[in-house]
Image (cartoon, rainbow, N blue to C red; front, side, top):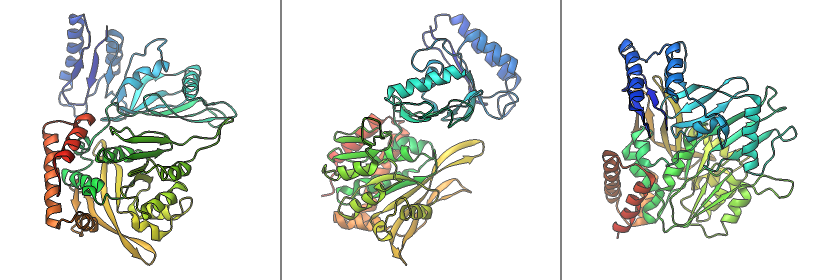
Length: 462
């Protein structure tokens, strides 16, 4: 019997999810208990719940998810842990919650989580040193790695794709730490990015045009941004626009991309071990060039593989996609041309688009936004010239076109043998398709990919 799960979301309507609850009377009492609290605080902007009442509800009704509490600067994500839980023990329930982005453990503190809607939250869950050590050891065993005094750092992946970073003494002298970055079971799509305000439908349609290239001139694109800005999510979304007739190969340090594609080969770097040789990103990328790829996707560019990637762009491999850590478009150029990437500036002219993505605060909310789109339009004194064609306006929270003519639009039109007006007409049609998906609330990956696939089957330029 699953106990009620209660969500108190500020002044929003209270949602009580009852799955397989046999005791209806208990459920009604639970709902009334919460509503009584709500009525006492109905004029409060952020719902405040007395700490004693929270504890009482937890003890009485079991699993509870509270997202605001008196005297705390961050919300409280509250659960009743399963005693002697299977899998990863006490944190198993957190791993099952698809609304969580990250799970973080600091020795001697309550576990913190990052909620997809409510941001950083405290929890009611604590781990003993033994609990934390057991969790980290299980993770390491699952990927045939060691984490101990001689090997105090661990990067690993759970079976569901979640990324795990863990440390033990002497690297973390206070005890075992871990950070788990979770991924949605159902990957985000372009519809989700529109719905969350990360992107608007006009730019979404252009991204579709650029990635596919009207089957003549797919663009080389880098998604740049800071940590947790949503780069990999955007990259995954862009890859959904690649036609299924194309042979697609992804190269990642830690496999994160989740694609629904007929001809997809996934490659992952292998760290050195006592028994085996290291397989680097650069080695994988060089090997990929011998595999007749139509599209190459590099999960995160940060080392010598950058030069190999740009060599591929400059030798006829169009439609290369990747991500890079940088805070501005110019910083992206600087990072690419300096150690350890060392890409010659002249090679950067093969890059068509830099998508800048940022995690920012709007009011009390933490959001992700594409805040700039820049084209590379040649060299100026040995430095790539950046043309911003979209920029985010913080005053209105809107991503606006700058009016700067798009070089890529001209290149794709010329390659496809159409006029600029025809290019714009096709982009408008695709924008209408995306807006229709948004209006119909069709957002799951399978459905969105089917719409894109059907479009390619039924629509031809010539």
